[in-house]
Length: 446
Image 1 (spheres, one colour):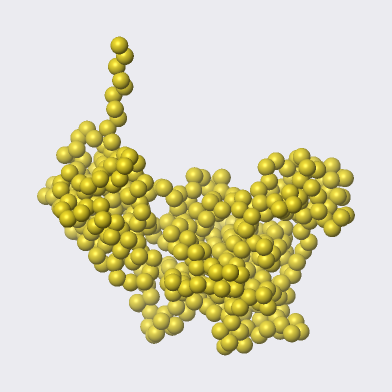
Image 2: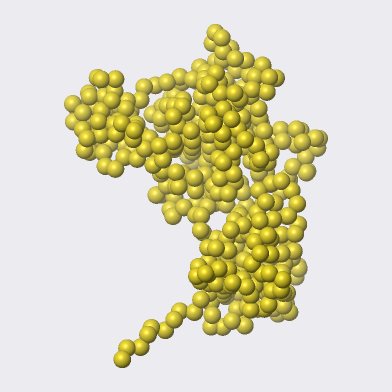
């Protein structure tokens, strides 16, 4: 007779408010484990349920889901989350932990949530109790009290090093292979490039043989590699291979979604704006947007003036790039004037808060600083796309201003990771700064 292995006890996860505001559907991601929601979290959600921003929608969606799950009365045992899942319960505020009271003089929501988690830890022993929070500081406080604390990692990218860059360098190719790209219009069947393993749709390559080289991209429709020539747009010409890859993707009408990442000064926004101006005749409108994430605790309400005046500091980088383009556009015969496009509403700079609910038809849509968006916000933006719309996301995933996102959990990294290999999608990581010699030096050394 063999004895069954002892069953591992399920865990009890205690949720912080920021997890819910990040993903209202988080309850389905804890498998067979139980979930506890401190009453303080519901109190905080009540503050967020009014408004039109993404966190307001997340708060309302979670509260509606909780109401559906719990029915008329919620017992201390909790309510089932569904077949194969655990249960959910709301935990009322317990007597304050003495160690916690001695350590922190201030009473705040974070400390109340931590107090509930510590109380559950003492009540549920030996069952593991885990505090789940996207707040790094709260997790550190919990760990200092001997409580297990984890980030919410369901939509996190596995590793920064494994994130798709959209480009590869293949060296030591036979000279004849490189030469093949300069005949027959630059089209070479994939079967003739055995050295390139598992190319994905719209992946870019630098193919070299000594001093000879060629830039190419993989087109899945014809299962072939196509030479990339240096393209100009609205007077802006790429300065390196990566920018050439980016410009081709931006000007390709078959690619409806493009992401560009790179450090400051690598040309992400300028290339996107130049492509938009070049493609303007094929689109009804150019739309420029960026999330209004402040670099300090001075948010929109702190700034004087109406909504337009409040948004100007956040939109200024877009205006700076438009100013760079005015001179080359002025030298081009028949080129549209930016001021005329702004006046005719064919070029619009808008905050992302006003995107929800819109249907964007034949729009060239550039979203700058997309690393400060959550995965849900990214999805919301893309699902606004109507027929003939092209969406460009630009950002630096190493420069996150959002308090609860990092290089692995932000929406831009999530999007790149999920979209690799889709025929409608292309991505390029820009590594070389082209703003100025000084900016490049500062980016590398400071």
